[in-house]
Image (tube, rainbow, N blue to C red; front, side):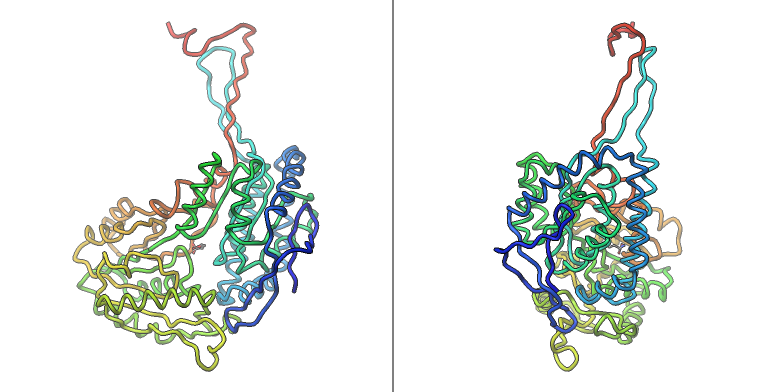
Length: 493
Ligand code: UN1
């Protein structure tokens, strides 16, 4: 399949473009090719988006919502096809792929309903016969840069609030997962979304991403990806005075207290650590365990990890699919070697799988290290693979301190039956998301998604908070007194 850019409502074929392959990480097969676009295509897409935005913003929000409802119904009709395609190009197991498509459907319905809200404020004025209110207005053209690990969900977290608020979109999806972007663009075409309202430009971050951030007509950039790239996006965006929303790395921990339901904790840890082969920003990467239950927890974790089947995500019995590509495999392996060298105890896993059925894909065994020092590289850096580090602590205070000792702050979790400990923890855990008696993954779309410290820059995807990224506040004062009234001066005797 030859994927094309989607600009101004047309599939645009460019003669001069270089193409790169899309690879199935389960077996190394080529699935499609995508174009490496240049600034020329970005400029074209922004022109189309800019033209479309004037008319789009004039459509009343409840009518714009109709398009989002239509998108939601299409996503629902195509759910199985989309999930299969997602597993093919990204590798996550089919059950999770269906869940991700569902996340897109949920987001479309949630933001469609915003078409009848988009709440602002009406407040009293300090002067008589004067009306005061604030409304959300669109920013204009939004530039979206999205990752491969949630190619549908994260795209919808960003595109749908932008659209309902009256913006148009130029979207650069990840080069690893362009087929999902193509499928979404096809849906936009099928529901007759006005031309130019969403434009998809495939290509590299340094070329297409940079051209988007530098383009004077793109006033807001939303990016999800690595902290290293995010900081470059922020730097360049800052130089051009852009609003930049960043969603970056995590080093998420599950805390297991001595009074925890251990069976449940094991289920929560394994699901959030090894689901999506550990490639969620929210994946559990550290287990902080009270010393009194450490041994018991470790035994159970090893026992249950042995039962997990690894393989092609399209096989419904498989629980852990491949990682995205060879570079990811090497990066994970690199951290595992560091862990071994620095004296952590390897309880299970630790190997690349590359023989037999695994030969052509990118598979890594689910891996558990114990006796990990909380300040070691293994316990501090984001690995983005199926690797857990177990860290022993003696108290809740210490557990919280260890949790907060990393440079990221996305998600955290505590397993405990003690309500006092749970409430203390939710107050002191320095992360944007906290789970109680559940693993570190599973955010719902109607709450803010994002994190503190190196995870973000104060903005949030999802929920009402997403609307703040894609709107400007406009405060409107209507004086119906018929005379000049001066705020702060008149009426302040
Ligand atoms: C991500 O981790 O990159 O909370 C997104 C979750 C999903 C979204 C994860 N709903 O695990």
